[in-house]
Length: 75
Image (cartoon, rainbow, N blue to C red; front, side):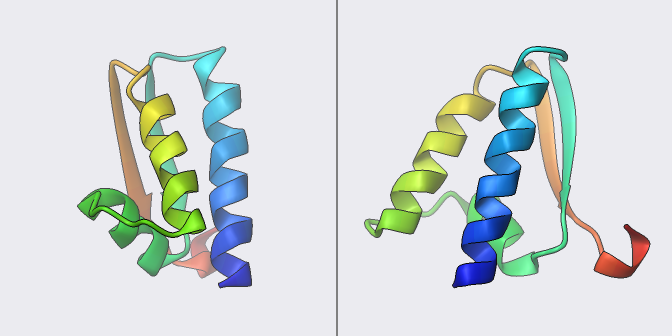
């Protein structure tokens, strides 16, 4: 779970930066489980789920956005 927390915090930083600069965004993450959790948007009552809900709120500020999984070898 520590790796997913690091990934979600990094995603939050990227979203915050992008909000000031762009209206359409593509976010690439190398954690397949995190991408699946974000794209499914299932209700999660854990602390981690609360953080994801904050991310969902920020993503609504974009005209268009996409979150994709990429292999870490391609970074």
